[in-house]
View 1 (cartoon, helix red, strand yellow):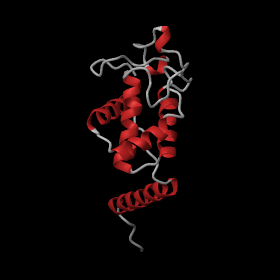
View 2 (cartoon, rainbow, N blue to C red):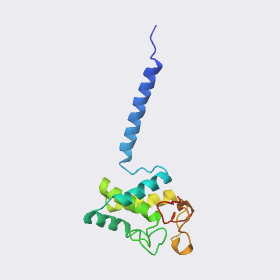
View 3 (cartoon, rainbow, N blue to C red):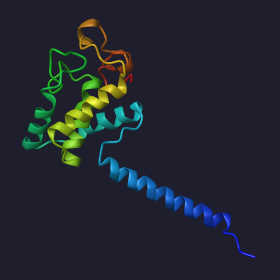
View 4 (cartoon, one colour):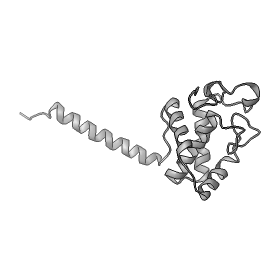
Length: 155
């Protein structure tokens, strides 16, 4: 009579196989930026905005990435300048700083990731006229800037 593997042995085997599959999937997808939840990401990105200082060369990468991209809240401005440091702008500026300073991302990768962030927080899209229509305090997901103070963010 053959001895069957124990439940513990099977569990360990499943964990090893599962971890290997996850690892292979991450490699296959490349090193793309992973979003978590909009609430957590907003706090994280705003913290990066406040804490990361870019060199002149890194600032140029950020400019190259964001100037071609209209600000979602005020499309007559670029995402590089925006019209004000609203909470939404602080998120994409912080995300950009992180990608450039900590991941050595180029302008195209930064621009693509920022565009993905816009889609993530407002899948219906931004109107581009939030600032001129009283939307500064509306949540991101409701075509808003999420407020003007880091102490009061509306995602």
